[in-house]
Length: 145
Image 1 (cartoon, rainbow, N blue to C red):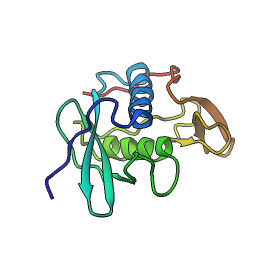
Image 2 (image 1 turned 90 degrees about the horizontal axis):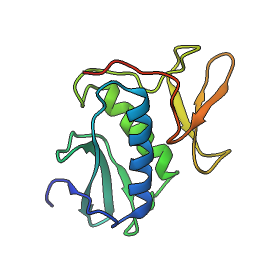
Image 3 (image 1 turned 135 degrees about the vertical axis):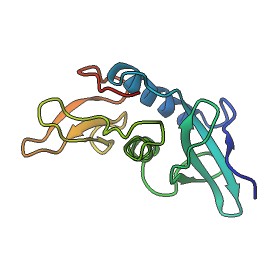
Image 4 (image 1 turned 120 degrees about the horizontal axis):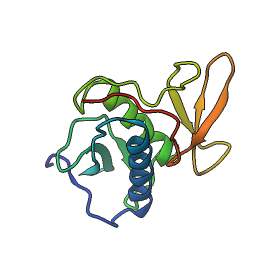
């Protein structure tokens, strides 16, 4: 088994679409955002999709998918968003960054696809509320080097 390889464009359109939406949110809300890329590592049990930057892989935990790029458990947008949040928090793109955070409460947002399949960023503070749709965040900028 070889290490993760850059996911070829259009191999898994849903994964490409989620990456583009996450990139749009990063671009609008983070100063100097990383350029996201998806990587894949095949195995006898399926494949693992990893999130990275540009043309190099950073080592996120990955999302197990079938041959068509569908996750074994859960929603691909939820899972890739969580992978990206973990990678940013772990400093895999440089600085350790909590992203995205609610500007009203300072709480990290969570992507939720249970109400809206497209994905909603939700603040789970004492006053839970929807902040925006996946790909449409634009309320703030977080410093990132």
